[in-house]
Amino acid sequence: ETGLILNIVFAWEQAVAKTTSKEIGKVVSHRFPMYRPKLGRIDVDYALYFFKSKWGKNLLEIASPGGAGRNKTLNQSDFAELPMVLPPLAQQRRIVAVLNAWEHAVDQTERLIAAKRQRKAGLFQQLFSNLPKRPLLEAADVWFSGVDKKSRDDEAPVSLCNYVDVFHNARITAQIAFMQATASKRQIADNTLCKNDVVFTKDSETVSYTHLRAHETEADLV
Image (tube, rainbow, N blue to C red; front, side, top):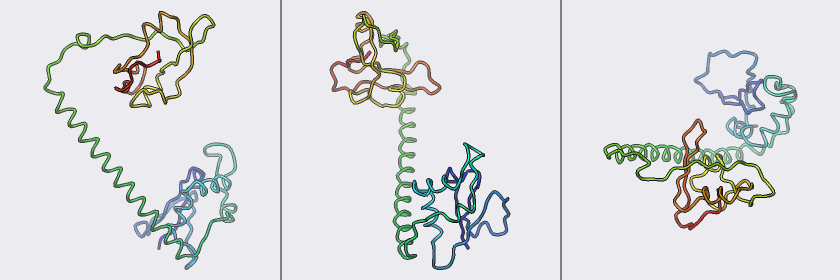
């Protein structure tokens, strides 16, 4: 018979799961209280979805007083008194069916995306592996921006393209909330981004790059 199991130390982080027939005969410590549903009152999958929701997380946090981490231990008495949203059993099962369908669709989409990314990586390898290699400087001008993040009264205002703007965006567009700073006339002339520039993050644990959208003529960014 299925039931609900929680980790009292991390319940506030939604450490909630469902037990199944596969767990019969297994033993857990006192840190994992288990709850068996009363017949006809609650569906275990509904309870699991409920406590995985934002509303359920808020309730788990209320029942887990204390500071951060291991100090936020679930108070099982308070947990037993939590005001759950508990519609009739038939409605609970309809809700579970809808959420299961959406979860299945999300899983299918994630698998499809992963497969397409793998195919793309293979295509990259196939397209570029046998091409002749030449130094980058033979094909492109390379420069490092020397604009700092400070603002000075004797300089012109600019929108500064930072590391995070490159790291988190596939394209540099005017819709990004760029940092506002200032730069000298020489810095603006040397570092203003233009159409089809490719921008790399220089200081990063993960390689990242992006470029300006092709339909933009000039970018007022440095």
